[in-house]
Image (cartoon, rainbow, N blue to C red; front, side, top):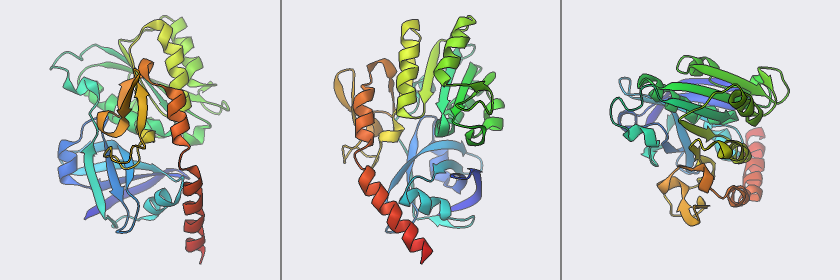
Length: 284
C-alpha cells in the first residue's frame, strides 16, 4: 500500500499529500503523471507529479476538490493508504533528455495557471539544478488561490504573480504580464504553459508572433491514462494524438485548443451526478 506521510491544504479546496512510493519516486521525471485509487471500488484518477524525493522514496501530489473522486482523495488523512498509486506515466518533459551542460544558461519562461503550478514546480526545480535561468508567471483568481509560492521562489530567477482581482501582484491576466515583459525586452529560448485550457490557448496566441518555442501540457484531458478510453484524444498538427501516452506535453502552436475544450465537457453531467451522491452519502 501507499501511505500518506504528510498532508496539508494549500487552499480550502486544494490538498497536498506526500506519499510513500519508492519505486515510483526512483523513476519519476518532470512532466510525468500517475494514477491513484483511493479505495478498492474507487475511480482511477490521473494526477500530475508535483515533486519526488528519491532518497526518501516519496512522491508529492496536489489534488483539487472538483467532484466525487477528488473529494474522496482529499478526505484521506495522514497514515491512510491509497489502494493504487501507479506510475510514472506519460513522457517526461523534452529537456530531460538534453545532454549534460546543454541547459546551463538557457532562458525558460513558465506560465502557470491555478493548479498548473503543481506540475510546473518539478520542471522549474529540475532546470534550476541544471543551471538554466527560469522566469515563472503564476496566475490565479485571487491571492488565496496562489499555491507553492515559496517553493517556486526557491528554484526560479523571477516569479511574477498575477491575480484577476488585483489582490496580489499584477492585476489582470497572465497574457497581459507576458506582453509587459516582452515590452521590457525580455526574451526566452523556450516557454512552457500549464493550466486551464483557455489560458493555454491565449498564451499560445500571445507568444506565437514572437517565434519563441512553446510547449503546453494537456494533462487535464486524461481519463484512464493508458490510451484505452480515447477520452484524451486531441488534434495536434492535424493528426489525432493521445495526451496520456504521446504527451502530455505538445507543441502549443499545433494544438487544436477549441476541440480540446469541447472534449473537456464530455462527462460534466456524470461528474455532477456522482459528486451530488457523494455529498449525500457523507451527510447521512
